[in-house]
Length: 114
Image (cartoon, rainbow, N blue to C red; front, top):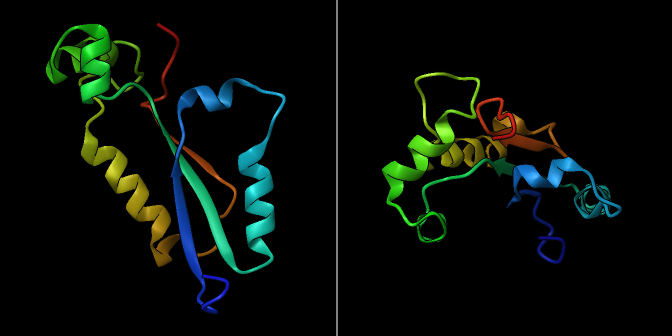
């Protein structure tokens, strides 16, 4: 982007665990450096999603993972689905978020520890 002189947006996928505290603040540092070149850097942090990896770890299918973790969401009656994460990424990549940078968008239904 910098070499091409193109402004743009980078959306990274992190995890809600990234917000739990660490000695390193790589996403913040990356976003600050990118801002100098007019590139926005954000990330989405979904809670547990019914992916092939999580299904294997919990030895269940997508619906089983959703059922297990929907109880840890404050948004009752909903389960995190791939389209929820995709919609958040699309927002951060769009011009509708043109003045948003260095943000970690939690897509977790106000997740509380299990």
